[in-house]
Image (cartoon, rainbow, N blue to C red):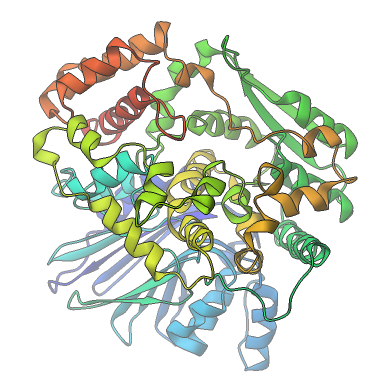
Length: 593
Protein backbone atom coordinates (compact mmCIF):
# COMPACT_ATOMS: atom_id res chain seq x y z
CA UNK A 1 0.00 0.00 0.00
CA UNK A 2 1.46 3.28 -1.03
CA UNK A 3 1.06 6.73 -2.54
CA UNK A 4 1.84 7.29 -6.21
CA UNK A 5 2.23 10.40 -8.35
CA UNK A 6 3.60 11.55 -11.68
CA UNK A 7 3.83 14.19 -14.38
CA UNK A 8 3.80 13.85 -18.17
CA UNK A 9 4.75 16.93 -20.21
CA UNK A 10 3.12 17.62 -23.58
CA UNK A 11 5.08 20.79 -24.39
CA UNK A 12 8.56 19.35 -25.15
CA UNK A 13 9.93 20.47 -21.78
CA UNK A 14 11.44 18.35 -19.00
CA UNK A 15 9.38 17.85 -15.83
CA UNK A 16 10.44 19.87 -12.83
CA UNK A 17 11.75 17.47 -10.17
CA UNK A 18 10.37 19.81 -7.49
CA UNK A 19 6.81 19.10 -8.66
CA UNK A 20 7.06 15.40 -7.88
CA UNK A 21 8.83 16.14 -4.61
CA UNK A 22 5.96 18.43 -3.55
CA UNK A 23 3.47 15.72 -4.38
CA UNK A 24 5.43 13.11 -2.46
CA UNK A 25 5.32 15.28 0.66
CA UNK A 26 1.50 15.14 0.50
CA UNK A 27 1.63 11.35 0.07
CA UNK A 28 4.04 10.62 2.92
CA UNK A 29 1.30 9.47 5.31
CA UNK A 30 0.15 6.88 2.77
CA UNK A 31 3.69 5.54 2.49
CA UNK A 32 5.82 6.35 5.55
CA UNK A 33 8.49 3.67 5.04
CA UNK A 34 10.49 4.96 2.05
CA UNK A 35 10.28 6.95 -1.17
CA UNK A 36 11.60 7.03 -4.72
CA UNK A 37 11.57 9.13 -7.90
CA UNK A 38 12.23 8.70 -11.61
CA UNK A 39 12.70 11.36 -14.30
CA UNK A 40 13.40 10.75 -17.97
CA UNK A 41 12.37 12.69 -21.04
CA UNK A 42 8.84 14.05 -20.63
CA UNK A 43 7.90 11.98 -17.58
CA UNK A 44 8.52 12.07 -13.85
CA UNK A 45 7.20 9.49 -11.38
CA UNK A 46 7.11 9.49 -7.59
CA UNK A 47 6.34 6.89 -4.94
CA UNK A 48 5.89 6.69 -1.18
CA UNK A 49 6.05 3.14 0.18
CA UNK A 50 4.17 1.30 2.92
CA UNK A 51 5.99 -2.03 2.95
CA UNK A 52 3.52 -4.93 3.19
CA UNK A 53 4.76 -7.55 0.70
CA UNK A 54 8.49 -8.21 0.12
CA UNK A 55 9.88 -5.79 2.66
CA UNK A 56 13.29 -5.63 0.94
CA UNK A 57 14.64 -2.82 -1.24
CA UNK A 58 14.24 -5.10 -4.25
CA UNK A 59 10.53 -4.22 -4.26
CA UNK A 60 11.16 -0.46 -4.13
CA UNK A 61 9.42 1.86 -6.58
CA UNK A 62 9.39 3.35 -9.14
CA UNK A 63 10.28 -0.08 -10.55
CA UNK A 64 12.17 -0.01 -13.82
CA UNK A 65 12.89 -2.43 -16.64
CA UNK A 66 15.46 -0.57 -18.72
CA UNK A 67 15.52 -3.14 -21.54
CA UNK A 68 11.75 -2.96 -22.06
CA UNK A 69 11.70 0.77 -21.36
CA UNK A 70 8.89 0.42 -18.81
CA UNK A 71 8.59 2.14 -15.42
CA UNK A 72 5.87 1.38 -12.85
CA UNK A 73 4.38 3.03 -9.76
CA UNK A 74 1.66 1.09 -7.96
CA UNK A 75 -0.60 1.44 -4.93
CA UNK A 76 -2.52 -1.55 -3.64
CA UNK A 77 -2.34 -5.32 -3.35
CA UNK A 78 -2.70 -7.97 -6.07
CA UNK A 79 -4.11 -11.10 -4.46
CA UNK A 80 -3.52 -13.43 -7.42
CA UNK A 81 0.08 -12.35 -7.96
CA UNK A 82 1.59 -15.77 -7.00
CA UNK A 83 -0.38 -17.43 -9.81
CA UNK A 84 0.52 -14.70 -12.30
CA UNK A 85 4.16 -14.93 -11.27
CA UNK A 86 4.27 -18.66 -12.03
CA UNK A 87 2.60 -18.07 -15.39
CA UNK A 88 5.10 -15.35 -16.30
CA UNK A 89 8.02 -17.52 -15.20
CA UNK A 90 6.79 -20.24 -17.53
CA UNK A 91 6.93 -17.65 -20.32
CA UNK A 92 10.57 -16.93 -19.58
CA UNK A 93 10.42 -13.97 -17.19
CA UNK A 94 12.98 -13.75 -14.38
CA UNK A 95 12.19 -12.01 -11.12
CA UNK A 96 14.47 -10.07 -8.79
CA UNK A 97 11.86 -9.53 -6.05
CA UNK A 98 9.20 -11.68 -4.37
CA UNK A 99 6.26 -9.24 -4.23
CA UNK A 100 3.35 -8.19 -6.42
CA UNK A 101 4.88 -4.99 -7.86
CA UNK A 102 7.30 -6.74 -10.19
CA UNK A 103 4.53 -9.11 -11.29
CA UNK A 104 2.57 -6.11 -12.62
CA UNK A 105 5.66 -4.76 -14.36
CA UNK A 106 6.40 -8.06 -16.11
CA UNK A 107 2.72 -8.64 -16.87
CA UNK A 108 2.65 -5.32 -18.74
CA UNK A 109 5.84 -6.22 -20.63
CA UNK A 110 4.28 -9.56 -21.61
CA UNK A 111 0.66 -8.62 -22.31
CA UNK A 112 0.60 -4.83 -22.63
CA UNK A 113 -2.54 -3.03 -21.48
CA UNK A 114 -4.44 -6.35 -21.48
CA UNK A 115 -2.56 -7.23 -18.29
CA UNK A 116 -4.98 -5.07 -16.27
CA UNK A 117 -7.79 -7.58 -16.81
CA UNK A 118 -5.66 -10.32 -15.23
CA UNK A 119 -5.12 -8.47 -11.95
CA UNK A 120 -7.34 -9.40 -9.00
CA UNK A 121 -7.16 -7.06 -6.05
CA UNK A 122 -7.19 -3.38 -5.19
CA UNK A 123 -4.94 -1.12 -7.19
CA UNK A 124 -4.08 2.22 -8.70
CA UNK A 125 -1.34 1.95 -11.30
CA UNK A 126 0.80 4.33 -13.34
CA UNK A 127 3.00 2.91 -16.12
CA UNK A 128 5.37 4.85 -18.37
CA UNK A 129 6.10 3.07 -21.64
CA UNK A 130 9.08 4.92 -23.12
CA UNK A 131 8.93 3.08 -26.44
CA UNK A 132 5.30 3.99 -27.08
CA UNK A 133 5.62 7.36 -25.29
CA UNK A 134 2.46 6.68 -23.28
CA UNK A 135 1.33 6.72 -19.66
CA UNK A 136 -1.23 4.13 -18.56
CA UNK A 137 -3.37 4.91 -15.50
CA UNK A 138 -5.54 2.08 -14.16
CA UNK A 139 -7.92 1.64 -11.24
CA UNK A 140 -9.35 -1.53 -9.69
CA UNK A 141 -12.84 -2.83 -10.41
CA UNK A 142 -14.65 -1.32 -7.43
CA UNK A 143 -12.47 1.75 -6.93
CA UNK A 144 -10.95 0.69 -3.62
CA UNK A 145 -7.75 2.56 -4.44
CA UNK A 146 -8.06 6.22 -5.50
CA UNK A 147 -6.40 7.80 -8.54
CA UNK A 148 -6.76 11.53 -9.31
CA UNK A 149 -5.50 13.53 -12.27
CA UNK A 150 -5.23 17.08 -13.55
CA UNK A 151 -4.67 17.81 -17.24
CA UNK A 152 -3.87 21.02 -19.11
CA UNK A 153 -2.54 21.53 -22.65
CA UNK A 154 0.97 21.59 -21.16
CA UNK A 155 0.98 18.62 -18.79
CA UNK A 156 -0.73 15.75 -16.99
CA UNK A 157 -0.44 15.28 -13.23
CA UNK A 158 -1.70 12.23 -11.34
CA UNK A 159 -1.65 11.24 -7.67
CA UNK A 160 -3.28 9.14 -4.96
CA UNK A 161 -4.93 12.17 -3.37
CA UNK A 162 -6.09 15.64 -4.36
CA UNK A 163 -3.78 17.34 -1.88
CA UNK A 164 -0.77 16.25 -3.92
CA UNK A 165 -2.20 17.82 -7.07
CA UNK A 166 -3.21 21.03 -5.30
CA UNK A 167 0.30 21.48 -3.90
CA UNK A 168 1.98 20.51 -7.18
CA UNK A 169 0.66 23.44 -9.21
CA UNK A 170 -0.37 26.84 -7.84
CA UNK A 171 -2.20 27.50 -11.11
CA UNK A 172 -4.51 24.50 -10.75
CA UNK A 173 -8.18 25.48 -11.17
CA UNK A 174 -9.68 25.09 -7.69
CA UNK A 175 -13.06 26.61 -8.56
CA UNK A 176 -16.19 24.60 -7.71
CA UNK A 177 -17.66 22.24 -10.30
CA UNK A 178 -21.39 23.03 -10.25
CA UNK A 179 -22.41 19.61 -11.60
CA UNK A 180 -20.30 17.85 -8.97
CA UNK A 181 -21.80 20.09 -6.28
CA UNK A 182 -25.28 18.94 -7.32
CA UNK A 183 -24.13 15.31 -7.06
CA UNK A 184 -22.51 15.99 -3.68
CA UNK A 185 -25.65 17.36 -2.06
CA UNK A 186 -27.96 14.80 -3.65
CA UNK A 187 -25.94 11.62 -3.04
CA UNK A 188 -24.55 12.31 0.49
CA UNK A 189 -21.15 13.51 -0.70
CA UNK A 190 -20.77 11.06 -3.60
CA UNK A 191 -19.40 12.64 -6.77
CA UNK A 192 -19.22 9.84 -9.35
CA UNK A 193 -16.03 9.62 -11.40
CA UNK A 194 -14.65 11.24 -13.43
CA UNK A 195 -15.70 14.48 -11.67
CA UNK A 196 -14.64 15.90 -8.35
CA UNK A 197 -15.99 19.04 -6.70
CA UNK A 198 -12.82 20.82 -7.92
CA UNK A 199 -12.94 21.85 -11.58
CA UNK A 200 -9.24 21.27 -12.14
CA UNK A 201 -9.15 17.70 -10.74
CA UNK A 202 -10.70 14.55 -12.14
CA UNK A 203 -10.43 10.87 -11.16
CA UNK A 204 -10.09 7.61 -13.04
CA UNK A 205 -13.32 5.61 -13.10
CA UNK A 206 -13.36 2.23 -11.32
CA UNK A 207 -12.83 -0.71 -13.71
CA UNK A 208 -11.28 1.62 -16.29
CA UNK A 209 -7.84 2.57 -17.50
CA UNK A 210 -6.58 5.57 -19.44
CA UNK A 211 -3.82 5.70 -22.02
CA UNK A 212 -2.32 9.19 -22.44
CA UNK A 213 0.12 9.82 -25.26
CA UNK A 214 2.83 12.45 -25.59
CA UNK A 215 0.42 14.83 -27.36
CA UNK A 216 -2.09 14.74 -24.51
CA UNK A 217 -4.61 12.51 -26.28
CA UNK A 218 -6.52 10.39 -23.75
CA UNK A 219 -8.07 7.02 -24.57
CA UNK A 220 -10.38 5.56 -21.92
CA UNK A 221 -11.16 1.83 -21.80
CA UNK A 222 -13.42 -0.21 -19.55
CA UNK A 223 -12.05 -3.64 -18.67
CA UNK A 224 -14.79 -5.07 -16.39
CA UNK A 225 -18.57 -4.77 -16.21
CA UNK A 226 -20.77 -6.12 -13.42
CA UNK A 227 -23.91 -7.82 -14.71
CA UNK A 228 -26.78 -8.98 -12.53
CA UNK A 229 -28.28 -12.00 -14.25
CA UNK A 230 -29.49 -15.22 -12.62
CA UNK A 231 -27.40 -18.38 -13.04
CA UNK A 232 -28.58 -20.95 -15.59
CA UNK A 233 -28.89 -23.59 -12.88
CA UNK A 234 -31.59 -23.00 -10.27
CA UNK A 235 -30.15 -22.74 -6.78
CA UNK A 236 -31.90 -23.41 -3.47
CA UNK A 237 -31.41 -21.23 -0.41
CA UNK A 238 -28.93 -23.74 0.98
CA UNK A 239 -27.04 -23.73 -2.31
CA UNK A 240 -26.66 -19.94 -2.04
CA UNK A 241 -25.58 -20.17 1.62
CA UNK A 242 -22.88 -22.71 0.79
CA UNK A 243 -21.70 -20.79 -2.28
CA UNK A 244 -21.46 -17.48 -0.39
CA UNK A 245 -19.74 -19.10 2.57
CA UNK A 246 -17.11 -20.71 0.33
CA UNK A 247 -16.47 -17.56 -1.70
CA UNK A 248 -16.33 -15.29 1.35
CA UNK A 249 -13.94 -17.65 3.12
CA UNK A 250 -11.63 -17.59 0.10
CA UNK A 251 -11.82 -13.79 -0.02
CA UNK A 252 -10.94 -13.48 3.66
CA UNK A 253 -8.14 -16.03 3.61
CA UNK A 254 -6.30 -14.60 0.62
CA UNK A 255 -6.39 -11.14 2.22
CA UNK A 256 -4.50 -12.47 5.21
CA UNK A 257 -2.10 -14.75 3.32
CA UNK A 258 -0.91 -12.08 0.88
CA UNK A 259 1.06 -10.10 3.46
CA UNK A 260 4.46 -10.30 5.12
CA UNK A 261 3.16 -8.47 8.21
CA UNK A 262 0.36 -9.28 10.73
CA UNK A 263 -3.26 -8.56 9.72
CA UNK A 264 -5.98 -7.38 12.14
CA UNK A 265 -9.74 -6.76 11.83
CA UNK A 266 -11.84 -3.63 12.42
CA UNK A 267 -14.65 -5.16 14.49
CA UNK A 268 -17.77 -3.01 14.64
CA UNK A 269 -20.01 -5.61 16.24
CA UNK A 270 -22.15 -5.98 13.13
CA UNK A 271 -22.56 -9.22 11.25
CA UNK A 272 -20.14 -8.22 8.49
CA UNK A 273 -16.95 -7.64 10.46
CA UNK A 274 -17.93 -10.40 12.89
CA UNK A 275 -17.99 -12.87 9.99
CA UNK A 276 -14.49 -11.80 9.00
CA UNK A 277 -13.24 -12.57 12.51
CA UNK A 278 -15.06 -15.90 12.59
CA UNK A 279 -13.81 -17.01 9.19
CA UNK A 280 -10.22 -16.10 10.06
CA UNK A 281 -10.52 -18.08 13.28
CA UNK A 282 -12.03 -20.97 11.30
CA UNK A 283 -8.99 -20.82 8.99
CA UNK A 284 -6.71 -21.29 11.98
CA UNK A 285 -5.60 -17.73 12.68
CA UNK A 286 -4.19 -17.43 16.20
CA UNK A 287 -3.60 -14.25 18.19
CA UNK A 288 -5.86 -12.24 15.89
CA UNK A 289 -6.02 -8.57 16.87
CA UNK A 290 -9.43 -6.87 16.67
CA UNK A 291 -10.33 -3.21 17.15
CA UNK A 292 -13.58 -1.39 18.00
CA UNK A 293 -14.51 2.26 18.48
CA UNK A 294 -17.40 3.92 20.29
CA UNK A 295 -18.63 7.43 21.06
CA UNK A 296 -20.29 9.25 23.89
CA UNK A 297 -24.05 8.60 24.12
CA UNK A 298 -26.77 11.13 23.42
CA UNK A 299 -30.15 10.92 25.18
CA UNK A 300 -31.71 9.75 21.89
CA UNK A 301 -29.05 7.26 20.83
CA UNK A 302 -26.34 5.01 22.18
CA UNK A 303 -22.86 5.80 20.87
CA UNK A 304 -21.21 2.37 20.88
CA UNK A 305 -21.82 -1.29 20.00
CA UNK A 306 -19.32 -2.80 22.39
CA UNK A 307 -21.74 -5.39 23.74
CA UNK A 308 -21.73 -7.06 20.31
CA UNK A 309 -18.05 -6.70 19.46
CA UNK A 310 -17.12 -7.96 22.93
CA UNK A 311 -19.22 -11.09 22.39
CA UNK A 312 -17.46 -11.82 19.08
CA UNK A 313 -14.01 -11.17 20.52
CA UNK A 314 -14.77 -13.49 23.43
CA UNK A 315 -16.10 -16.29 21.23
CA UNK A 316 -13.11 -16.32 18.91
CA UNK A 317 -10.55 -15.43 21.60
CA UNK A 318 -9.09 -12.42 19.84
CA UNK A 319 -6.72 -9.86 21.29
CA UNK A 320 -9.34 -7.15 21.46
CA UNK A 321 -8.79 -3.38 21.67
CA UNK A 322 -11.50 -0.80 22.42
CA UNK A 323 -11.35 2.93 21.77
CA UNK A 324 -13.96 5.10 23.49
CA UNK A 325 -14.03 8.63 22.11
CA UNK A 326 -15.62 11.33 24.27
CA UNK A 327 -17.20 14.40 22.70
CA UNK A 328 -14.41 16.62 23.97
CA UNK A 329 -11.99 14.58 21.82
CA UNK A 330 -14.05 14.83 18.63
CA UNK A 331 -14.14 18.55 17.92
CA UNK A 332 -10.39 19.21 18.27
CA UNK A 333 -9.66 16.35 15.84
CA UNK A 334 -12.33 17.06 13.22
CA UNK A 335 -10.25 19.59 11.22
CA UNK A 336 -7.33 17.17 11.31
CA UNK A 337 -9.47 14.37 9.88
CA UNK A 338 -10.86 16.65 7.18
CA UNK A 339 -7.38 17.70 6.09
CA UNK A 340 -6.76 14.03 5.24
CA UNK A 341 -9.84 13.65 3.03
CA UNK A 342 -9.10 13.63 -0.69
CA UNK A 343 -12.68 14.84 -1.23
CA UNK A 344 -15.40 16.15 1.12
CA UNK A 345 -17.21 13.43 3.10
CA UNK A 346 -20.44 13.61 5.07
CA UNK A 347 -20.37 10.21 6.80
CA UNK A 348 -20.61 10.63 10.55
CA UNK A 349 -18.18 7.76 11.09
CA UNK A 350 -15.35 9.42 9.17
CA UNK A 351 -13.70 10.82 12.28
CA UNK A 352 -14.30 7.46 13.98
CA UNK A 353 -12.22 5.66 11.38
CA UNK A 354 -9.59 8.37 11.59
CA UNK A 355 -9.20 8.12 15.37
CA UNK A 356 -9.45 4.33 15.38
CA UNK A 357 -6.83 4.06 12.63
CA UNK A 358 -4.42 6.08 14.75
CA UNK A 359 -4.67 3.46 17.48
CA UNK A 360 -4.68 0.46 15.13
CA UNK A 361 -1.60 1.63 13.20
CA UNK A 362 0.45 1.26 16.38
CA UNK A 363 -0.42 -2.44 16.51
CA UNK A 364 -0.62 -3.67 12.88
CA UNK A 365 -0.01 -2.44 9.33
CA UNK A 366 -2.96 -4.22 7.69
CA UNK A 367 -6.61 -4.65 8.73
CA UNK A 368 -9.64 -6.28 7.18
CA UNK A 369 -12.87 -4.30 7.21
CA UNK A 370 -16.53 -5.15 6.54
CA UNK A 371 -17.23 -2.30 4.10
CA UNK A 372 -19.31 -3.31 1.11
CA UNK A 373 -21.41 -6.06 2.68
CA UNK A 374 -24.55 -3.91 2.91
CA UNK A 375 -24.30 -2.85 -0.73
CA UNK A 376 -23.43 -6.32 -2.01
CA UNK A 377 -25.96 -8.27 0.09
CA UNK A 378 -28.81 -5.78 0.54
CA UNK A 379 -28.44 -4.55 4.10
CA UNK A 380 -29.97 -1.06 3.84
CA UNK A 381 -33.57 -0.13 4.59
CA UNK A 382 -34.07 1.64 1.27
CA UNK A 383 -33.49 -1.49 -0.83
CA UNK A 384 -36.83 -3.18 -0.06
CA UNK A 385 -38.59 0.16 -0.50
CA UNK A 386 -37.15 0.50 -4.00
CA UNK A 387 -37.79 -3.16 -4.76
CA UNK A 388 -41.50 -2.91 -3.93
CA UNK A 389 -42.06 0.62 -5.22
CA UNK A 390 -44.45 1.16 -8.13
CA UNK A 391 -43.07 4.59 -8.95
CA UNK A 392 -41.79 5.23 -12.45
CA UNK A 393 -38.47 6.52 -13.72
CA UNK A 394 -35.81 7.96 -11.48
CA UNK A 395 -38.33 8.70 -8.71
CA UNK A 396 -38.31 5.02 -7.79
CA UNK A 397 -34.69 5.58 -6.76
CA UNK A 398 -34.47 9.24 -5.80
CA UNK A 399 -37.53 9.29 -3.53
CA UNK A 400 -35.84 6.76 -1.26
CA UNK A 401 -32.21 7.87 -1.60
CA UNK A 402 -31.55 11.49 -2.57
CA UNK A 403 -30.60 13.80 0.30
CA UNK A 404 -32.33 16.73 -1.39
CA UNK A 405 -34.71 16.96 -4.28
CA UNK A 406 -33.69 19.34 -7.04
CA UNK A 407 -35.96 22.11 -5.77
CA UNK A 408 -34.34 22.03 -2.32
CA UNK A 409 -30.88 21.94 -3.88
CA UNK A 410 -31.66 25.20 -5.67
CA UNK A 411 -32.69 26.60 -2.29
CA UNK A 412 -29.45 25.37 -0.69
CA UNK A 413 -26.74 26.93 -2.89
CA UNK A 414 -26.08 30.35 -4.35
CA UNK A 415 -27.53 30.99 -7.81
CA UNK A 416 -24.02 30.84 -9.31
CA UNK A 417 -24.15 27.08 -8.81
CA UNK A 418 -27.66 26.43 -10.09
CA UNK A 419 -27.90 23.71 -12.74
CA UNK A 420 -30.51 21.44 -14.23
CA UNK A 421 -31.34 18.25 -12.32
CA UNK A 422 -28.07 16.68 -13.43
CA UNK A 423 -27.95 14.03 -10.69
CA UNK A 424 -31.31 12.50 -11.64
CA UNK A 425 -30.18 12.27 -15.23
CA UNK A 426 -26.84 10.74 -14.27
CA UNK A 427 -28.37 8.14 -11.99
CA UNK A 428 -30.95 7.14 -14.58
CA UNK A 429 -28.19 6.69 -17.15
CA UNK A 430 -26.17 4.55 -14.74
CA UNK A 431 -29.18 2.37 -13.92
CA UNK A 432 -30.01 1.94 -17.61
CA UNK A 433 -26.47 0.75 -18.37
CA UNK A 434 -26.71 -2.31 -16.11
CA UNK A 435 -27.61 -5.66 -17.64
CA UNK A 436 -29.93 -7.05 -14.96
CA UNK A 437 -32.97 -9.22 -14.32
CA UNK A 438 -34.77 -6.94 -11.84
CA UNK A 439 -34.79 -3.28 -10.83
CA UNK A 440 -33.13 -3.94 -7.48
CA UNK A 441 -30.31 -5.73 -9.28
CA UNK A 442 -29.66 -2.53 -11.22
CA UNK A 443 -29.63 -0.43 -8.07
CA UNK A 444 -27.20 -2.68 -6.24
CA UNK A 445 -24.88 -2.94 -9.24
CA UNK A 446 -24.74 0.86 -9.45
CA UNK A 447 -24.17 0.99 -5.71
CA UNK A 448 -21.17 -1.35 -5.94
CA UNK A 449 -19.65 0.25 -9.03
CA UNK A 450 -20.35 3.92 -8.30
CA UNK A 451 -21.99 5.01 -5.05
CA UNK A 452 -20.05 2.90 -2.55
CA UNK A 453 -16.79 3.94 -4.22
CA UNK A 454 -17.07 7.56 -3.11
CA UNK A 455 -18.72 6.99 0.25
CA UNK A 456 -17.68 4.16 2.62
CA UNK A 457 -14.85 2.79 0.47
CA UNK A 458 -13.14 6.16 0.02
CA UNK A 459 -13.76 6.98 3.66
CA UNK A 460 -11.98 3.87 4.89
CA UNK A 461 -9.08 4.30 2.45
CA UNK A 462 -8.49 7.95 3.32
CA UNK A 463 -8.79 7.60 7.07
CA UNK A 464 -6.67 4.45 7.38
CA UNK A 465 -4.00 5.64 4.97
CA UNK A 466 -3.72 8.88 6.93
CA UNK A 467 -1.92 6.67 9.48
CA UNK A 468 -0.05 4.39 7.09
CA UNK A 469 -2.58 1.59 7.63
CA UNK A 470 -3.77 -0.65 4.81
CA UNK A 471 -7.47 -1.63 4.87
CA UNK A 472 -8.61 -4.68 2.92
CA UNK A 473 -12.28 -5.24 2.08
CA UNK A 474 -13.16 -8.92 1.42
CA UNK A 475 -16.82 -8.15 0.69
CA UNK A 476 -15.68 -6.32 -2.46
CA UNK A 477 -13.75 -9.32 -3.75
CA UNK A 478 -14.56 -9.55 -7.46
CA UNK A 479 -15.71 -13.18 -7.45
CA UNK A 480 -17.88 -12.60 -4.37
CA UNK A 481 -19.41 -9.45 -5.86
CA UNK A 482 -20.20 -11.29 -9.11
CA UNK A 483 -21.79 -14.18 -7.20
CA UNK A 484 -23.93 -11.83 -5.10
CA UNK A 485 -25.03 -9.85 -8.17
CA UNK A 486 -26.48 -13.04 -9.64
CA UNK A 487 -28.47 -13.74 -6.46
CA UNK A 488 -32.24 -13.04 -6.42
CA UNK A 489 -33.61 -10.39 -4.03
CA UNK A 490 -35.33 -13.03 -1.89
CA UNK A 491 -31.89 -14.20 -0.80
CA UNK A 492 -30.98 -10.69 0.34
CA UNK A 493 -33.98 -8.74 1.61
CA UNK A 494 -35.68 -10.96 4.27
CA UNK A 495 -34.79 -10.62 7.97
CA UNK A 496 -34.07 -6.90 7.55
CA UNK A 497 -31.51 -7.55 4.80
CA UNK A 498 -28.38 -9.66 4.26
CA UNK A 499 -30.52 -12.78 4.65
CA UNK A 500 -27.94 -15.18 3.20
CA UNK A 501 -25.19 -13.82 5.46
CA UNK A 502 -27.41 -14.27 8.51
CA UNK A 503 -28.24 -17.82 7.51
CA UNK A 504 -24.60 -18.84 7.17
CA UNK A 505 -23.86 -17.13 10.52
CA UNK A 506 -26.43 -19.03 12.59
CA UNK A 507 -24.66 -21.25 15.10
CA UNK A 508 -21.35 -19.73 14.06
CA UNK A 509 -21.60 -16.19 15.43
CA UNK A 510 -23.20 -15.20 18.75
CA UNK A 511 -27.03 -15.12 18.47
CA UNK A 512 -27.07 -11.52 19.70
CA UNK A 513 -25.05 -10.46 16.64
CA UNK A 514 -27.01 -12.52 14.11
CA UNK A 515 -30.46 -11.48 15.34
CA UNK A 516 -29.83 -7.78 15.95
CA UNK A 517 -31.44 -5.15 13.77
CA UNK A 518 -29.33 -3.25 11.26
CA UNK A 519 -27.41 -0.48 13.02
CA UNK A 520 -25.85 2.58 11.44
CA UNK A 521 -22.53 3.56 12.94
CA UNK A 522 -23.50 6.00 15.68
CA UNK A 523 -21.87 9.32 16.31
CA UNK A 524 -24.71 11.07 18.12
CA UNK A 525 -22.98 14.45 18.48
CA UNK A 526 -23.03 15.01 14.72
CA UNK A 527 -26.62 13.82 14.34
CA UNK A 528 -28.20 15.60 17.30
CA UNK A 529 -26.51 18.97 16.91
CA UNK A 530 -26.39 21.05 20.08
CA UNK A 531 -24.03 22.83 22.45
CA UNK A 532 -20.42 23.15 21.36
CA UNK A 533 -21.05 21.12 18.20
CA UNK A 534 -23.70 23.59 17.08
CA UNK A 535 -21.37 26.47 17.91
CA UNK A 536 -18.61 24.79 15.91
CA UNK A 537 -20.81 24.44 12.81
CA UNK A 538 -22.10 27.97 13.18
CA UNK A 539 -18.54 29.31 13.31
CA UNK A 540 -17.62 27.39 10.16
CA UNK A 541 -20.65 28.55 8.17
CA UNK A 542 -20.67 32.17 9.31
CA UNK A 543 -16.94 32.94 9.29
CA UNK A 544 -15.62 35.66 6.98
CA UNK A 545 -14.14 33.27 4.42
CA UNK A 546 -17.38 31.29 4.13
CA UNK A 547 -19.39 34.50 3.67
CA UNK A 548 -16.97 35.74 1.02
CA UNK A 549 -17.07 32.41 -0.81
CA UNK A 550 -20.84 32.67 -0.85
CA UNK A 551 -21.39 29.02 -1.61
CA UNK A 552 -24.73 28.76 0.20
CA UNK A 553 -27.97 30.67 0.18
CA UNK A 554 -27.88 32.62 3.49
CA UNK A 555 -31.61 32.12 4.06
CA UNK A 556 -31.22 28.33 3.84
CA UNK A 557 -28.28 28.36 6.25
CA UNK A 558 -30.28 30.48 8.69
CA UNK A 559 -33.23 28.10 8.45
CA UNK A 560 -31.06 25.12 9.43
CA UNK A 561 -29.28 27.01 12.21
CA UNK A 562 -32.63 28.01 13.70
CA UNK A 563 -33.66 24.37 14.01
CA UNK A 564 -30.46 22.30 13.66
CA UNK A 565 -32.04 19.02 14.73
CA UNK A 566 -35.14 19.44 12.63
CA UNK A 567 -33.72 18.80 9.17
CA UNK A 568 -32.53 15.33 8.25
CA UNK A 569 -32.11 13.58 4.91
CA UNK A 570 -33.97 10.46 3.83
CA UNK A 571 -30.96 8.46 5.01
CA UNK A 572 -30.97 10.26 8.39
CA UNK A 573 -28.00 12.51 7.76
CA UNK A 574 -27.98 15.97 9.34
CA UNK A 575 -28.46 18.63 6.66
CA UNK A 576 -26.67 21.26 8.71
CA UNK A 577 -23.70 18.92 9.10
CA UNK A 578 -23.56 18.46 5.32
CA UNK A 579 -23.15 22.18 4.76
CA UNK A 580 -20.59 22.53 7.54
CA UNK A 581 -18.62 19.48 6.35
CA UNK A 582 -18.12 20.80 2.83
CA UNK A 583 -17.17 24.25 4.11
CA UNK A 584 -14.75 22.73 6.65
CA UNK A 585 -13.11 20.60 3.95
CA UNK A 586 -12.69 23.63 1.72
CA UNK A 587 -11.13 25.66 4.52
CA UNK A 588 -8.71 22.86 5.42
CA UNK A 589 -7.62 21.85 1.92
CA UNK A 590 -8.09 24.76 -0.48
CA UNK A 591 -7.99 27.87 1.66
CA UNK A 592 -4.96 26.81 3.71
CA UNK A 593 -2.89 25.98 0.65
